[in-house]
Image (tube, rainbow, N blue to C red):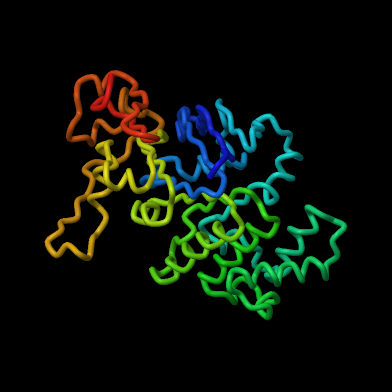
Length: 321
């Protein structure tokens, strides 16, 4: 992790609706080093998936990027033409969607997905060469060559997710963004998929952004963690530091929702209240309606990020202001 691969500065994404602007992501800033695994965690509706899609400029209409910059290898991809983005997707950055059955074409065999991807980026490659490459990549994720002629519905959920991961690494990108890659999988398959992603990072020296609502996953698998709430970054630190020294009241509450099998008398806590309506988010800190440590200024003033440790920032007036 000697150099920076990705730098996001003040990124804002809105969804334009007839009722007003849904502020899905606001003023997001973070960086990602080479070969680093970054966990992006928060409740449903916190803006995680929108942020992930924004990083490859695939925010669906009526969403659009309002402001900010996304520097990939020191180049702002928000200035790229769409043709440049098509060349970048898959080759430099790949996206693993949370539902492989919705992402894979049900009338195409597994191998055809790879052949199309490879030959789209390099038309000089023959179908036989692309098929051989597909078999090799599938083998690297634990799928035998005879499954290359199967249709997606003939594969289990875990195998379909492995196919999606194989497609993501086919062109050897520098960055993979995985959006809830273990959704709807049982815990054993979840562990295998997460272990696979981690081993691929180690093997190919790529970076990984893991988007999930499960804080226990990112604490176990990631180098650093970004906690999102209501479209904003509320805390960021190394996984170890976040676990040992959580500062933001939201992060602290999230940690109490993680079960610990070693504690026989542990009481799991729910976070009172609901996330805000992003058409009309509360003034000041967006977490204050659910916070047990709220102060008057939390209701009135926008909260900046405060340094609360080495490479540790927190958006909370308890630590400054």
